[in-house]
Every structure is written in C-alpha cells, then in structure tokens.
Amino acid sequence: MSEGLLTILKFCFLGVLWLFFVRVVRVAWAEVHAPPAPAVPPGAGRAAAAAPAPEAPAPVSQQATGPARLTILQPAERRGRSYELGQDLTIGRDTRCQVSLPEDSTVSQNHARIYRRDGRLWLEDLGSTNGTYVNSNPVSSPVLLHKGDRIQLGRAVLEVNR
Image: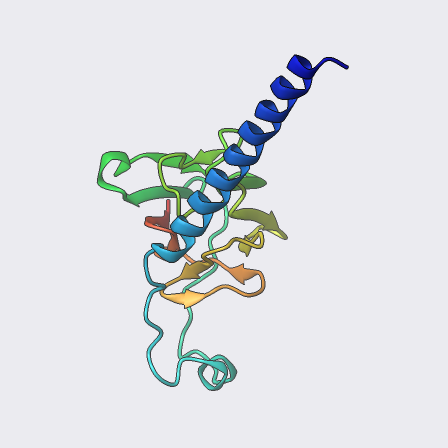
C-alpha cells in the first residue's frame, strides 16, 4: 500500500471515531438534561397498590358510545390531535409508530404500546429510558386503562377518552 492511501484511511478512521464520540456525548447530554419524572405522592408505592380502589371507573371498551380514543394534551403544538384505539397502537419517536412524537428527545424510539385484550385496553412500557406514567404512577407492568386516564411519556401527555 502506498503512503498516501494509508494517510487517507487514517483520517477516515479518525472521522468515524469523532462521529461516534459526538453521538455518545449527545445521548449522555439528553439523559442528564431529561425532565424529572412526575412526583409520586408519599405512600403511593406498593402499599397503595395493595389497597383496593374505592370504585374504579369502568375499563375503556368499545361500546355503543363508540370506539375509545387517545387525545394529545401536551405538547401544545399537537394539542387536540386524536387517535382511535384499535387492537394495537405504539407510541414513540419512531415515525413508524402510530403516535409519533419525533420532536421529543425524552421519548424513546418505541416507548409504549396500548393494546386490546378481552375488550379492555392495556398500556405497556416497552423498556423506555425515561419511563411511562399513568395518572402520575410509574408503569412497570401492563396497566388497565380507564376513561380519563392520563398517560405521560417524556414531555407528552395523552388522555384516554371516547
């Protein structure tokens, strides 16, 4: 190999290494400057989960009133946008998600999914970095959704309604 070719390869390698370093710093910066998770009231941990709910609202299902919908409340520029909740709906930054939030760097590529099982709607976090919350409670396993529930992913807030 000629000396000139080796010099070109050396600079190409340094350029790729520099791009990798920039990407790592960018991801670390986004993690450090992520918005804080919603505050969980004291005693809302396992003890509150073990206590029976006084009267939980009826699960969201497709009844005579029509199909359930998911409406964006935040960010303001997307407020009011609504999505029909069918059998399966994914939420994330990826443009292939049914609810795509590409401008929110605190939302993972495939952040969460809402799916229907036995006529009831369930929300599942898909291993997101910043977590998913329903009514300010962190989601660690699939959660049954009810009308009026508010889902928070990063800076986005969505509401389950008809």
